[in-house]
Length: 293
Ligand code: COA
Ligand code: MG
Image (cartoon, rainbow, N blue to C red; front, side):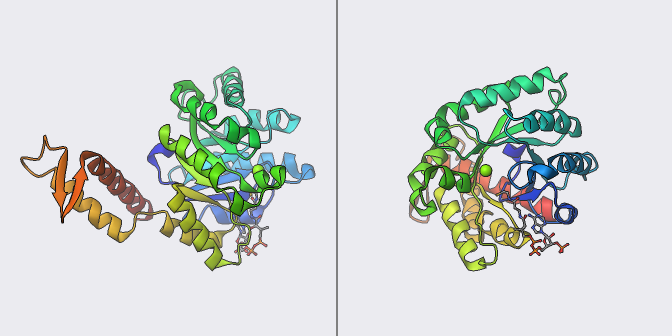
């Protein structure tokens, strides 16, 4: 599901904020994560669970990818969340505080033992990478995406938690983030960058999106509607990229070029791998166009 969808903009919406939840349905965002975890105070957990389940059950099916972030499965809240949200049939379950690959296996087993709800459709698990252990175990975690039943569909960075747990400043984390990006690419998994807290700083946010894009992230997690337009723009293929992709595709699809692996375009070498990348770029652009049509 998400493998086929652009995930430029992924908005967190606190499950106990009715106004934000109502607003979220009309936003031009690629994915919404209704949050039952850190955005919701303990006293509001139960009401948030019920509200989120209601919103997800009655949603407009095709508008966005709909995810629910549950609480840590080791907690009572997490167990109750899981039981409730499976019935609401979101597209994605976001698992917080992942430490090891066994956490993915454990969630998979819990879904399976909950009466097979969710097993007959493409429910995905997105793993939050926000603990030092998750960074250490990133390869084993991502490997679970290769095992059909485990449903791992994306990695989502939780940079605020990483900063809190390690005392390391965000601008010093680049090597950890790049390790995660490399692993995600190796396993063909979408990877979404962490949030930018200062939502009134539009310029700073646009720069953070550009940096995330240049690092190889597929999109950014967001906390406020004012961040959506920038993320959608920065993580979409640019006009120049689209033009180049069209040229590369046309070149490789020209009669007589079926068996050519290397060709020349405006004095540059282009390989068949560039053709495949160009086709992917055009496909993403087409999906974005259909989404906004
Ligand atoms: N999703 C959807 N709508 C949101 C939103 C969000 N994350 N954040 C704000 N809005 C809505 C508000 O409800 C308001 O709606 P209105 O036009 O109907 O009045 C509008 O956008 C403007 O909001 P604003 O007044 O500027 O912000 P706020 O004070 O209501 O909220 C925050 C500010 C930071 C509390 C809020 O954006 C938020 O809770 N963000 C998500 C935090 C989160 O989930 N953190 C956990 C993951 S890191
Ligand atoms: Mg977190």
